[in-house]
Image (cartoon, rainbow, N blue to C red; front, side, top):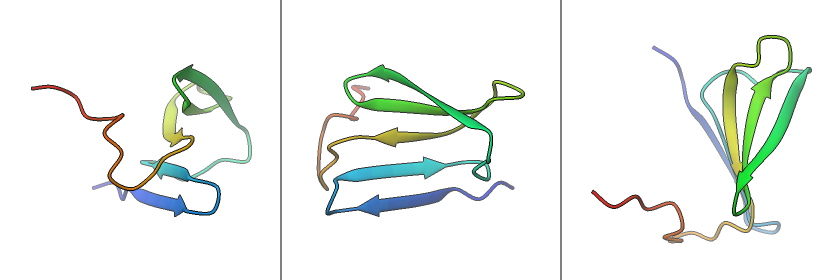
Length: 65
């Protein structure tokens, strides 16, 4: 089972989530509204995501059910 690693930097309001290990050769693509997809540049496989200007309790990522 994969480990998910979550990093939050309150000073810069940056939330980073990795579901695979970070890579030296990773690339980032902004998807929308300050959400960054992190991918392995060799395989183009998504390995994580970063959310810019994230504050605890932010509802920007809530998805209606």
